[in-house]
Image (tube, rainbow, N blue to C red; front, side, top):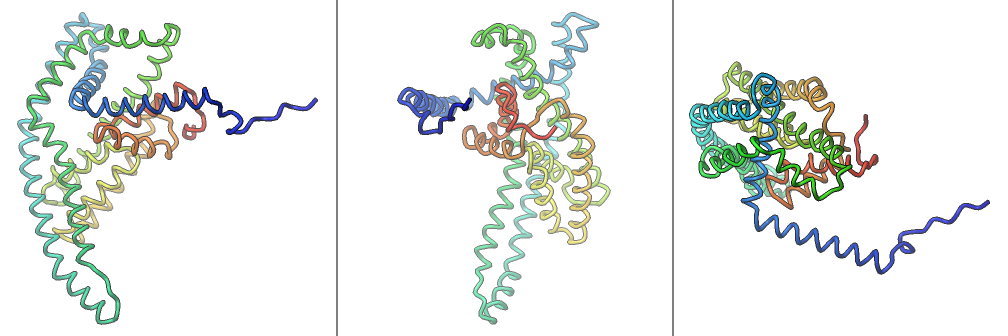
Amino acid sequence: MTSPATKNLWEMLTNSSLVRFLLLFASGWALLQLLSYFETVIVVFTIAAIIAFLLNYPVRWLKRFMPRNVAAVAVFLVSLVFIGGLTLTVGVSLLSQGQQLIDSVTEFINALTPLSERVETFLKARNLNVNLRALEGQLRNQTLNGVVASLGVLQIFFANVLNFILIMVVSFFMLMDGKRLWKLLLKIIPRHLHLRLNRIVEQNFLGFFQGQLILMLFLICSTFIVFLLLDVKFPLALAAIVGVFDLIPGIGATLGIFLVAFIVLAQNVWLALKVLVACIVLQQIQDNIIYPRIMQNSLNLHPVIVFLALLIGAKAAGVLGIFIAIPLAGVFVDWFDIDEMKGEA
């Protein structure tokens, strides 16, 4: 008995399937335009939802001893006092060190101009035409953009008081009555799939952000202590740069470490080498010891899918898209059970 011949792509392509594909593509494009138009609203509600989900963990623990509403109010007030104190103490110092750091990096890169001119003259004398000035300009722009961008994320968080208040108010109401709102969203899918979606979202989305927060705090605290021991200037600002880059899965921590090492190069070459080695050791501890224990029940994505999700998220929603692209990809892969997109067990 002969097995039926498998159809290739062209044989499966019919008018109806082509129309469905075009409609799906048009819907995706319209959704991206809608997200771009309501970007501020989406950012506020997304951050508020993440905060509410993270605060829900201590609320679950406290509700064993008190009513849930009382536990939610207590957790929210404690977190508000903590964030407010962090803003008044660490935030002011961080912004001050950040501005001094930008000025120091600018002076260091400007000091490289005579050196690049001498090297360029030396190469031209040997018939090697190399435009080091253009390379120097790109180096200056990329370095300053990296420092300003990483510090700018924290500056926006600490300086934009109105959005911060709005985010905290929305997160409070989500924390108090988020279960009903989640049930409202679940009405768009069949009832028998609710438990599965709850498990997938909590495993990928909430587990990811909880793990990333713990990993970021570990790297910031550990690098800050190391920078203090090594007597590095602007230790808080440099540790914050490493922590912000660490929020980008995959290559973020590596980019942050090499950027900080280059910045410390302006202070001392030997000091920059020690900072680079110490940060690499801390990153290895994070990746090989802490990360497997925190993320063991969360994401399971192939590295190629991780980078693909990052690029799509950055293109679709900017900075916010970078942070939420990975857990959304994890939800997608687990929901449709695509084994080819999963990482190794």
